[in-house]
Every structure is written in C-alpha cells, then in structure tokens.
Length: 224
Image 1 (cartoon, rainbow, N blue to C red):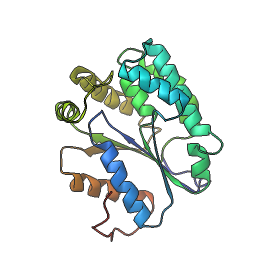
Image 2 (cartoon, one colour):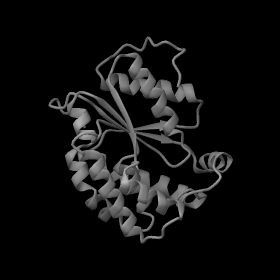
Image 3 (cartoon, rainbow, N blue to C red):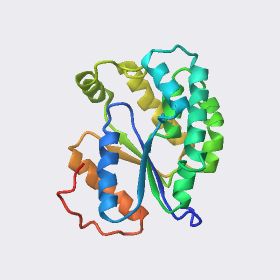
Image 4 (cartoon, rainbow, N blue to C red):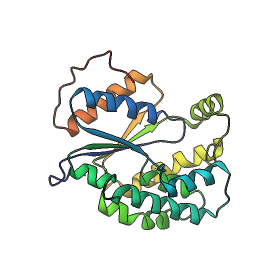
C-alpha cells in the first residue's frame, strides 16, 4: 500500500507474538529516526487510557470476560487511540509526526481469532483499518518456543495469551490474516532469530525505502 501524500507523517506498526523482540526493535528504530531529525511519537496497544487499563486487567486474569467482550474492548481502545483529537495517532500523523506503535489491528486478528471467527474480528476493526492503515506493518517472526523461553525468564506472571500453545496459534493466525489482507497492507516479515543488530539493520533497510532513501550513515553509539 502506498503512503497517502495528503498525510505529512508516517505510521508504522510493529507486530509479533509476545516475546518476539518487537518492542526492542521499535525502540532501536525510534532512536535512529530521532538521529535523523525525524519527529516521532512512540505508542502501544492496549493503551494506558481507561479502556486499555481494563483490557490489561482482563489479560492478567484480574477480571474475567468473554472473548467477544475483550475483542470489542480492543476495538474501543484502538478507536480512541486512533481518533483522540489531541493525542490520537491520526492527529499526530497529520501534524507531520511519524508514529511508531507496538501493536495495531493485526494483533487482534491473530490473538482473538483463537476463540472467535477471524472474519468477524476483521469486520469489527474495519472502522480503524479504513480510517488509517499503517504505511508499513513490520512483523518480527520469532519461533514460539524461543518467545516462550524469553517470557518465563523475564516475567513473574504470564498473561492470558502468553502460553506456548497460544503463541503457536497466534503466529499461525498472523500468517492467515496476512494472506487475507495482503492486497490492502504493506507487510514486511522480518526473521527474528538473528541477533538484535542484524534484525535492526534489515528493518532500517525497509524503512529507508519507505522514506525515499534517507541516509543510513548513523552514529553506531546511538542506543536506548
């Protein structure tokens, strides 16, 4: 999908199963863009706003809910995330800011389709998708077994979807959703099994093309 010339900023979504390394790569990319004097806004889903807080409570097991309720709450949180008049993604992009988000609607397609019909999940997210599709969806593809090892090493508590079977299902559903939406979306699949710098270099290569050839001569000392 080509970038809308009427939008001065760009919108880049990072996707991947839990533990894939997407948050690390998003952070590295943000520092590279800052080093290029490109204004950025870093955000994530679920958000830290009221609906996002409720979602986090459900994911952690503090609150019980039906899968359809959780899916609908994700849509509500995403809609506010997108359309909030001051802090929303759309407002930032129209101001000329590049927005980097840790998860967007492909996460719903992948994770909520384990319990719900994927076509329904895609349908309830259609307002957000039709309002603003990412200029690029970057999927960090890391084997579920590696992701699970990372999660149990670094987490004291695993969330609802942070189980090995859930991770395997989510990865499979990511690829099903990519096949369904490939005609509408710019999807870049990045091998997440390599070292951090190799992954970051490949991501920078596709981002450079998105920006039309910004220089890759970066200060190697720039790290979060």
